[in-house]
Image (cartoon, rainbow, N blue to C red; front, side, top):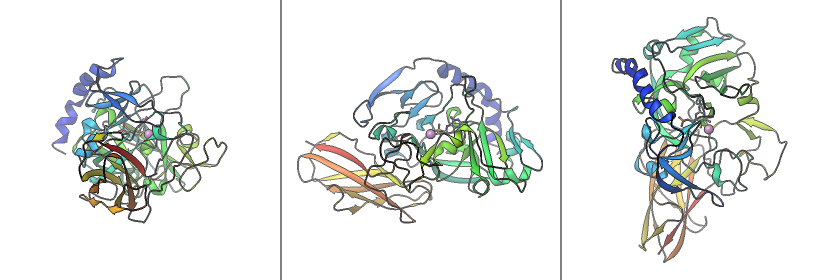
Length: 407
Ligand SMILES: Nc1nc2c(c(=O)[nH]1)N[C@H]1C(S)=C(S)[C@@H](COP(=O)(O)O)O[C@H]1N2
Ligand SMILES: [Mo]
C-alpha cells in the first residue's frame, strides 16, 4: 500500500501526457506486417507502438482501440506483460486521464447504505490475488466459417495476468446488500458518443458476485492497470469471458431483478445449446448470457503456414486454458486426431491461468505437418473436434490446427 500511494498521487499528470500523445492521433504509425491467417483470407494487419503503455500490438481498430496480442508473446511468457496485453473498448469516449484524488467507486441500488469509496480506502482493505486469463468472447472470431460480423480477431484477444484487488463481496458488505437483491450491475468511466447509445453495463447474479473470487482489481502483474486495460479499477470474474470484466469501474448497482438493459438482455448472448453453437444461418433460437469459458489450447512457437527446414523431430510449444477449471492434460496429434501423445505441462499458476506445455513430434519427411493440440480440464471437459458456429462468433472452443510446411 505504501508503495502504491505515491504512484497513485502522480498518476493523473503522467497518464494524461501519455494519452494525449497517442489516443488523439488518428492514424498511428505502423510497424511490421502480420498475417492472422483468418478463414478465407483478409487477415493482413500491422503492428503498432502508438498507444500509451503498449508496444508491438496488432492493430485491429484505432477508435475505440482494438489491439491484439501476437502469439509470440504467449510463447515467451507465462504472464502476458502489461505492455503487450490486448485491448478492447466498445465506445469511443474512453478515459484518457483519471484524477485519482477525485475518483470514487459508488455502490448503490438495493443496499442498506449507498457508499462512495476513494482509492485510498480501497487500498486499505484486505487483498485477494490470483492469476487468471482474460479472454474476449469474440476471440478467434476471424476463424469462424461462414464468416460473421464483428471485430475480426485472430487468437490474440486474450491474456494472462496476476490480478490483485479486493473481493467484491467485501465491498458489497460495506454497503449491506438487501434481501431482495438478484443481480449486481457494473459500469465504467467510458461513454458512448452517439446520443441514445447504451452505456456499457454488465451484471452478475448476486451469488456469483458474492462468491469471494470476483475481485475489484487495482494491480495487474504487480503494477497499476494500464489506462487502456481499465485504470484505476476493473472487475475480474475468473473463469468467465471478459465481457464481464468491466474496466475503469466506478459504479456498482445492486438490482432487485434481472438486468433488462441492452448489454445483458440483447448483446453478448449465446444460443442455449451445450456449446453455444447453431447451424450456420439459424435465426430466432433461445439464448443465454455468455458465461464461463470452455477449455482451449494453442500452438505458440510456430505459426500456421510457416515453412521450416526438415528435422527428424519438431519441438512444439503452446499454451492451454482450462476455462473455469484447471488444465489437466494437453495432447498433440499429427495424424488428424487418430493418435495422441501427451504434452509435458509447465508450471501450474492456478486453475484460471494459462498453462504452458511442450512436446516433440516426429517428422516423417517433407511436406505439410498438421499440428493439433487438445486440452482437457480437471473436470474432464475436453475440446471438441467439430467446428461450432453462432452468428456473433463467440466462445470458439474446437481443437485448432496449425499447419507447418517442412521443406
Ligand atoms: N468499461 C468497459 N469495460 C469493458 C469493456 C468496455 O467496452 N468498457 N469491454 C469488455 C470486453 S468485451 C472485453 S473483451 C474486455 C477487454 O479487456 P482488456 O481491454 O483489458 O483486454 O473488457 C471488457 N470490459
Ligand atoms: Mo470482448
